[in-house]
Image (cartoon, rainbow, N blue to C red; front, side, top):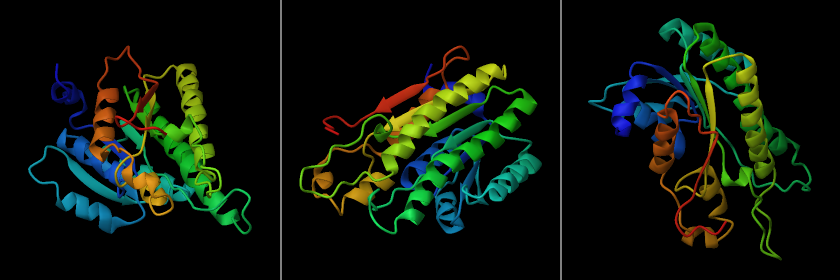
Length: 260
C-alpha cells in the first residue's frame, strides 16, 4: 500500500505544526495539507505562514495560522484552546520549532541566548506536548507526537582545531529531545493511551536553521551534502502511517556522503 493510501486514515484529522514558517516545518505542513489534514501552524510570524497558504491550492486539506510564542505558557494554552474550540482537538503534533545561536557556552553576556535555546527547543516542546496529550487522551484517539530532533541530538560535531566551535547550547538541547522522547513514551504507556511518539533526526537540510546558521561561519558547510526539507516531510508521513502496533521511536536520516 502506498503512502498516499496509508495517509487516508488522517484525512480530516487535525495536525499542529510548530515552526511552520521555516523550511522543514513548511514542507511538513504542506504535505499534511495535501494529504487532507487540517493543519494549524503555530508561529510568531503570520506573514510567512500566509505565504505558504497562498501557495496551496486545489488541495484536500487546509492550513490555519495560529499566532503563538511556544516559550510562553499562556500563548500555548490559548492556541490549543482555540484549536479545540474550532476543530474539537488535536490528533497529530509535530514539534518542529527550534533555534540555534552563535554564542559559546563560555562567552560573556550569553545568558539571553542560553535561555532562548532551552526555552524554545525544550520547554516549548514540552508545553505543546502536554497540551496535545491532554487533548488526545480526553478523546481517546490514536494520536501521534513527532519531535523533529537532529543528528546533533546523538553526536556533538567535532570542531576543527583552531577554529571557533559552532555547537554552543544546541546539541545539549537536542540531546534533551532524545531523552524527552523516551520519557514521553514511558508516560504514554503509564497513561494507557493510544498515542505514539517518535523522534526524527535529520542531518543537514537545505534552508534549515543549522545549515543557514553555520554556512556563513564554516565554508565547508557550503559543499557538504544536504537533505531537502521534503525528505524530512516524507519521513514524517512514513512514521505516522505505520500500523497501530508499530511505533517508530527514532528515525535518523542523512544525505548520502554526509560526514558529520
